[in-house]
Image (cartoon, rainbow over all chains, first blue to last red; front, side, top):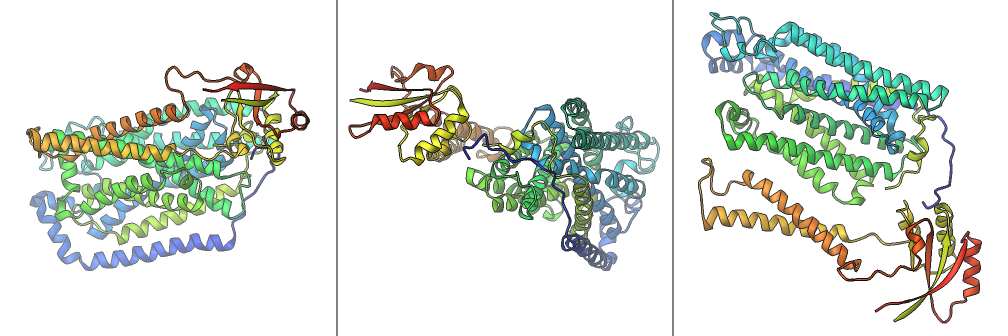
Length: 434
Length: 174
């Protein structure tokens, strides 16, 4: 502990995925497919009653239009979008974390840097899935994409939505989505490439270059993360808006991203990798999880309290649907979110000892990931599925995404040494004490 | 009461850290170490127990929370009920900001007062300084002396472990 002059030479460490682990990932996907099939069968058997019932809530003319897809297909499309937005967000957080550490000249995080770099593996496939789902299923997701909704005189005309046509129109929306994904992907690859070159050649030149790239990325990410939250998440509730929403979604992504980092670091450590990682690094990650769980709650509450207090119909409808609306379909998830995303990490991560123990961090990381996935569930489902929500299809698709994400994530993790051997702050990270 | 100390003066923090380990291993009890800046890991090296201040802080926070809830529920619910924005008299979401603030207020004030008290940093207290150079560029290790201590041996031990000088100092405490 006290031997600050003690040196152990940093050597490259390469992850090798055992066939057993790969099998676990594939069985997660298989379990997801099975759940998805069961869910579709269950939902399709209800089709006679449920489908007709759903239609009569809206006016007859609109109903014919809104119910474009049968319930089971609509659920598949919405949950594809839901899980994909969650995983893309977590991927981008990996790059965001690296960029943040560079700009802050932070040394402690160097030993976990490769995990964050590898997290962005989902950006490209996720982006493709996102565009495909948008083209095929946009009518089930976004009310504003309906035919004639912005055309005066059409029976679907909606003056409020038409007023937003300057921002929410198909060409501009697609351009924006592509631009966000392109920026995130480009900077992830750029930072990764510089880091890999540094491994080969050494020297501080790559470090300074990374800081410039990271600073530019942070500026762009500040804007794109907020705007992507409006586009991908908030515009499903097209009549409603909240100025806190960008932060709210970012807070969800950010704390989930830290949970992924922590969980991966612990699993790698337990598998015998990351020999320089010790409880001091875990302590810092634990502090991040603790702090940003509170940050999420702070943003969540700031949004909730203003709407609750002002009680304006056009704003309060959002919480009306989630608290008691649709025969209380979402009420328990609303309170479950607060419990698992705030109360649970807050109480469990409060003491110093808890933040330094792998088992506690593991429990809290998994809880946070489940909690924030269900936070996104609560953002998407009431607006799109109304009272026809369910869980079997949704969890099945989430598991398919999880398995695929793990396969790509570990593949990228294997492509480089787990220790960035020539990073100028590596020594500081190895001797990190808190 | 007068106490006598042997002061080992060190020039380098790494040397100091090794010296702490070795001096403690030799069975000598270190009274205190004075350094110009905080050194990571020195608490563990000196075997100092973790502060119980966080536990006190938790209870100060609970007091603040209880006070805030009592304040708002009693005032707005019972003593002088008012209708504000059509909400119930006891509207918990509206009470959260004040509860949060008072929890933080009680916690930080309680912690600061407790910390100053146990560190004896209250007003008009004169803090004894064993060697003023510990506020500049020297690291000072203080070892309390009693009648049985062999100063020559101790001096030798400190010098062997890198002390640039070893002084003896008396400190009168009242």
